[in-house]
Image (cartoon, rainbow, N blue to C red; front, side, top):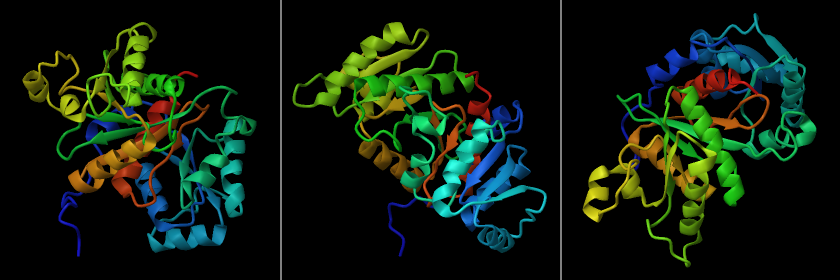
Length: 310
């Protein structure tokens, strides 16, 4: 029996995101460990939408069997054999050689996927560069996104890491056409409290952003009700240019972000595409339980991020 807290709505990839992605060249997308129906179905949808040129990496027999399961003729596409642990490093090698423009997670544990791509020795990230994951979240019937960061990569980020990750989200927001992105820094309270370190961290990041991120409105610490509701802000006497209108929501740690993303996805029917920024190519990173709409949104994000100047 399904929980009463699960949404009956089917996530839909936002048309606005797809339209923006189609303004850019079609990237070659390397699917790591492609031998499973769900990731192949997402890549097929992206391919049919004109958002991907597939490069399939993994066990050839499993890939062909999974493609047959979903009725997809993969004969026209490049297929590269690689044992499970070698698939991600092979994708990194393709990207270094200019033969892949983005890399998509297939049927592989996230930790294994990232270990084969993130280390600076893999050649996709300059030493010292901080990577960050951004979810592009939209609600059914509404194309306006909320960019949630970081809910998948940085576990317990310090202030410097959060600053770098916020800068990635702002860069993505501008690529999506938001001239003056509005960012909220989530905490349990809007008051700086010594016993709640993330409140002080948020205040420090907001001060930093006033100079480091010109043309961006960054406020924090902000409790979730203040982030989502201008009415709540008015009732509490909280003067804000971000309340009820946030484009970016930065969480203090991965546990908070992961719970919030899954609540929106499972409990509200939201579509959540995800991308890792900070490398020479974007990484399309979704949960193995996410559906085709989320994977299509991730592919669209990959097109947009791949087009950004390095």
